[in-house]
Image 1 (cartoon, each protein chain N blue to C red):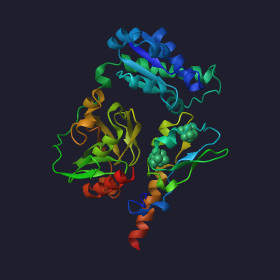
Image 2: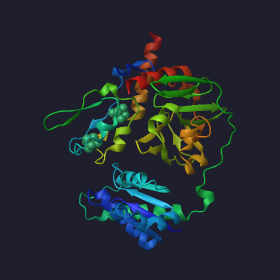
Image 3: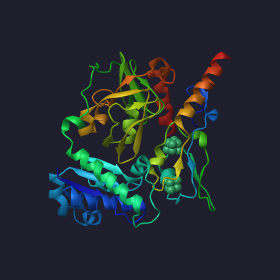
Image 4: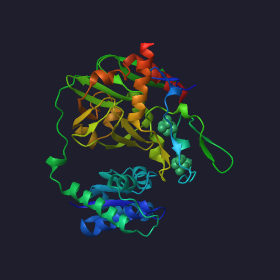
Length: 284
Length: 95
Ligand code: SF4
Ligand code: SF4
């Protein structure tokens, strides 16, 4: 599959050099068209056609995420992302401290390229998340917390929250997870969802993927321990659904519960979370 | 005022806050600009940024580390922190 690739320029730190190397290798071996960030900055028109016709891969070197932020500032739709610093950690390949890549840097670049090629060529059936297993009725009554001109809604029943603004709604032995109205408003429009892998086993307060907006990268802190059984396919293709309907259509993950009775002990119910939101809004 | 309890455990009994690795930090101040809870403070002198109010940090939040290019911010182990919280809650419920 063809693609367009926008990477960090690679002139600030070794992670950037890896990002740049990934773009070069994707261009030579995987039909990717390189989008030069500096030229893109001068002339969006130069890349208009390529960007319109191909999925966009963004490769950031470090957490400053210059390439992502640049793409977002131009309203480019990002299909997939790589953060070299994370890939370095997860692969155990520690980078040499020079801008000219050493053996580990080159090996990391190839590892990232292999992963990208695999995900681009995999049949859709293996990359598509499983369909949700259960029908969840829409939320019922809401509590409303007002602060200045803002209104934050919180379902009064059926939903539990952690203090990290993530909700969980159990139904039988599965549960849906999403973020609260308060958090979606704080983040503003969400433009990328990095969902957890299917079958991932997560502890309570572990990481269930991340959400990105122009304001922040938000870690979805797992409200419960469990195993990921579904990811909402609609929020992957349209992340702003989380902003539009945070407690309903904007759910993010479905998990099979590991130990609800233990987990609920460290969760807030609707009215307790409403008090927490009031406190947060006043403090912010 | 900041939160003084987390899940009814006094906040100052929970050791959750960022630690700055001064070997890596380049004082870009992204983290300090990002965090709304006044955890970081800028200072005069060599260490221009310090974790001045560790107990203002939201337990289990690690958001500022995702803004840090040089990866200079680290946090305690989550599982150890959870164990600590559960233990304190149990002690308090038997009292
Ligand atoms: S974001 Fe990282 S490098 Fe920048 S001031 Fe904070 S700790 Fe230092
Ligand atoms: S972890 Fe969150 S609350 Fe704590 S200092 Fe960083 S951004 Fe602020």
